[in-house]
Length: 194
Image (cartoon, rainbow, N blue to C red; front, side, top):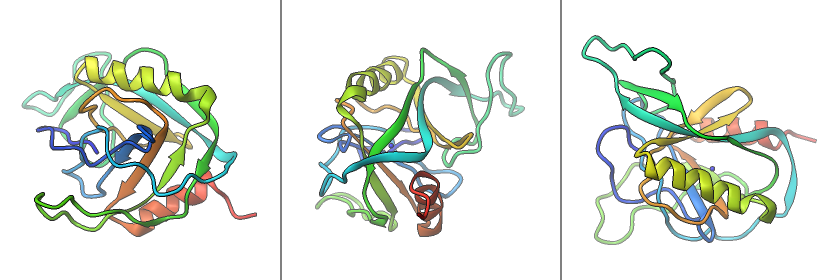
């Protein structure tokens, strides 16, 4: 379930996997994604359910592309927001989540008092089952230690690859986008209409 490709900004993404735990906020503009870091707790935990498609969390090593925009051998590019000009390589073992609590899509909280105003974001919270918390915490730590990113892959597409701004417990995941339509698109894959 904030990231940024070049400079790391204060946490926007977060602790729903922190106490939610991990909050992943991705902006849908091509050049900005907030760093992965602890943040506020989720408003309410949703009951666990089988997902329409698994969520795969893959730690990645990252580095800037060459001046020509190419990546070294064994590295790849992704089309997730904020990833332009960055090369990635898989690191460690991914975690696959097949059941989780998913909150409804809503407008996400704005910046804390004293922080610069940010564009409106829409998303939802994913509550990680207790059996996966240790594994999610470990991939957050791997991403942080490598100064890398954490890919959020659903239905064969990497929706986000935020940088880990700090290690923290992986209890919840916040996924947020600048576009409400994009948040709804991912939500409908995870929670298909019955």
